Length: 131
Image (cartoon, rainbow, N blue to C red; front, side, top):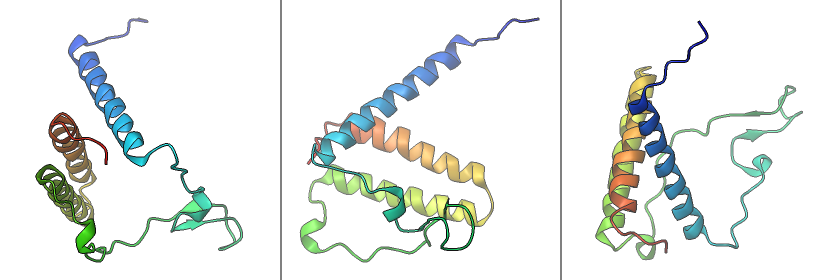
C-alpha cells in the first residue's frame, strides 16, 4: 500500500541532529560577527568559471596540503580550543586516510564523529563562547 513506515526513534535522532546543526550554525555566525560577508564562489580558490577551461563552471577540490604553522599570537591559548583543534586535526587525518583507501563511508564517519561528538557535544556544550 500507500503506508509510510516511520520509526519514532529515527525521527527523534534526526531531530536531535538538526538541533545540533542549528546550534553550531548560531555559534559560528556569532563568532564571525555581523560584518562578515562571504566570498562569492568565483573568488574561492579552486573555483573555475566558464571559459577558463572551455567547459561549464565547476568546483575543483583544492589540493590537499598542510597549512603553515600559525603565528604564535594566533595559537589558541584556552585548553578547550586547543582540544577541539586537536580533534579536528585527527578527523582530517582519518578522513584523508580513508579517502586515499577509497573508503568513503569511513571518511564520512570521521567527519560525522567530529561534528557530533567533539564539536557539538563537547566544545559547544562545554561553554565555549565565540571570540
